[in-house]
Length: 291
Image (cartoon, rainbow, N blue to C red; front, side, top):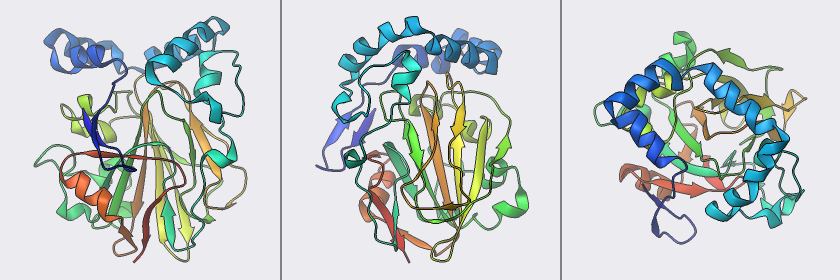
């Protein structure tokens, strides 16, 4: 899978975690039957998540670090009691500088990004299939505010830093709205085959109310082998760059929705998305500004 390295503009090919397994699940008839019957089920991800909490799983850390070139020098801790301890590692504050301009939206996570300035004028992943905001939020009345707004999708692969942060400052509810669902993979190999995954998977969201950017929806989406999404924020008044929570083992996704004409997404992100290419992103980087 090709993507754009934002810092250099170079097109690269991703080393996909579990690529052969994903191809079998989503492109082989026997694999697809297995996916429907077993792999998307919560208990499979829960069992695997429990395995990643076991102290014996720590043996998998260094082979994983070497295979995917994970930089442990920027982690606050260097020793981990389990693979999940490593997976949800915190980074040194200086490792992810925050753009503090009050008119700028920052990336809430490390990963790869797709950006859409106006959902009504955009196809999402598969030509002809529109992203269904109402189905995703499971609240048709709320969805109307965002149907012609902007959407930004952040895909976190297993080697990425898996804590997510607030992209803007504002006020938030004490808890997220939770929507039950399945645990399909959110890897592009899966999404190209089954684009509706985003409104089939378990997910949750909250509204960040901002005098500058309006009501911004921030949603976290579960995926295959994601044991859980843990919200860590305490206050209802939050600052840009503050930690919101983390995903336990597995790749997953953060999705932001903005009302129409509230932001202008950075041009490089839009152009790459139009070409069907994700762009690498780091938490704290600028991704958009107030319109």
